[in-house]
Amino acid sequence: MRIWSTIALGLFLVITGLGQSMPSLPKGSKWPQNFRELREIYKPTGLEVKRAVVSKTQGVIAKPDIVYIKRGKRQLKLDLFLPKPSKKVAPMVVLIHGGGWRQGSRTGEHSKAIWLANRGYVAATVEYRLAGEAKFPAAIHDCKDAVRWLRANAGQFNASPDRIAVCGGSAGAHLAALMAAAGPRAKLEGANGARGSSEVQAAIVIAGPTETDGERVGEQSRKPDSNYRLFLGGTIDEVRPIYTRASPAHWVSKETPPMLIIGEHSMDSAQAILSKLNKLKIPNETLVLKGGIHGEWNWTPWFSITMNRVGKFLNQHLK
Image 1 (cartoon, rainbow, N blue to C red):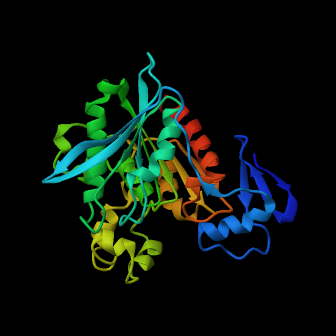
Image 2: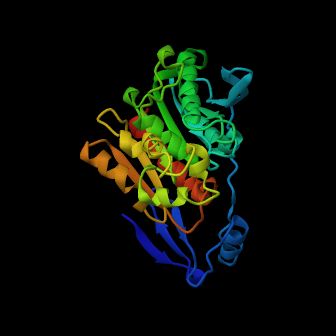
């Protein structure tokens, strides 16, 4: 249940049910184009907008630059964050960065990984080939190989190979959703598909495309500088079968694991996948982030709102 309350300068807060307050832009505010402008809008209200930084608690260990697969001379790496040693076998979470499939870095997921490791999860932030280096389905092949590596090596860091979640934001959310929804019939396993399972047991999808063969994405693909055009190798009119193959909503089945889908401002863009999940009675939850701009889940106060919901979801479906 959400309770609205009014505070100074027209700023409204929504109580999310987890003790966190959801900001809303003050009435009359010009829509911010970047986080500098967003910070200035909220500054008079006393709400501090800044990039989230999380410190490791005692016992948490970081193991960076682990090579999980080689593509010729190219080494793909992940950074691993291990929780405080315990007799309990830890679940794992694979974190996939965003950046429109054309930029970004696994280091951008470190705050989430540390947050999770502080709470008993083994967390891995994963590098994958960007669209300028290799077109679809290279990125999904890489992410699936990262899961295979983690599953095969789980015993080395007291982790469970049978309790793995994937979490991504923006373009990373698309890859996370596709990993969860696309089973063997999608033929997206890559050359190493026979070397082990890439299945995940839960997925967190934060503000990314979950349907790539609809008209909303189709319109964007026709723009000259479209990320979709670069990533998928053409406009939707030119390579529609690839857009369908890359669409998480297309592949949802009874085998799809539970999903937490987080939207920005509304859940309109996720209706296709939510409809299929609900029709097949796949457990799913939603959260709408408000009062920010794209990427706000990496900034305070939205980071805490997002991660507390992620933690609750993982506790229910992974621990």
